[in-house]
Length: 278
Image (cartoon, rainbow, N blue to C red; front, side):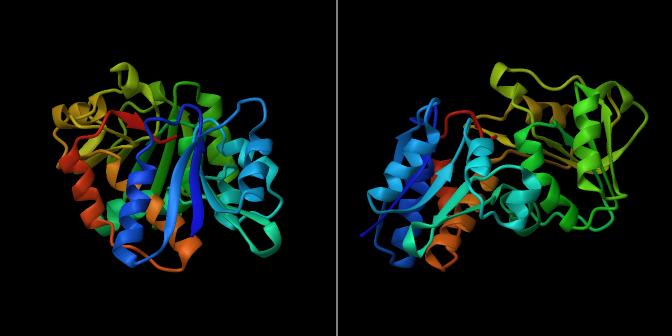
């Protein structure tokens, strides 16, 4: 039986073992998947020990995504662009390859599951940390007409936008958003964990616009509540993204793409603690 795991710190809350067990049952794959509480002092040692023990793949969550990127010399183009790795594939001979499935997970949830058409749309991405970095490339590939990265510290948003090297992307502080209008606003900050939302001016959401929070939980998140108050046509949380990025990791490891819809429904029915995948 092949061995897989998710490594992070903290890690007890992770739904990944439940998700991957459901994928394995659905696709007839024989594997086990567990949680690893990673050492903040020796992440590389934890990875080496897992591989030496026969591990075939790892998911990487906070705070190790950037460290995983630095550890691995063999990285996919999307991991390279994100500057972060959330999926490690153990190749023959124990060689390691890093990938990042966060962006594809977000776009598949929005476009595939929810039916959002990115073509020509005006998109606002809130935050300039690892979560925003991990999804920016996939968002651009989806074909928006304009994408603004906005952050409390404007210089970080400007730097992230400049690194994208795409004429459609610009960066700014939150206070510079007044008077602009967007068809989709994505919250890639963790502010909701403290019950807050980014300090946004009213009127940002275009008529018929959507909001999406990468935070997810059993109850509507603070950002979902903000979207509702702003008249959003759809207010979505990040549970679908969580499952979709896991499905892409599963495909990379096992060569088969699971059906995500029943797994999302299972998690919704079972109740989910409020968490952020960043």
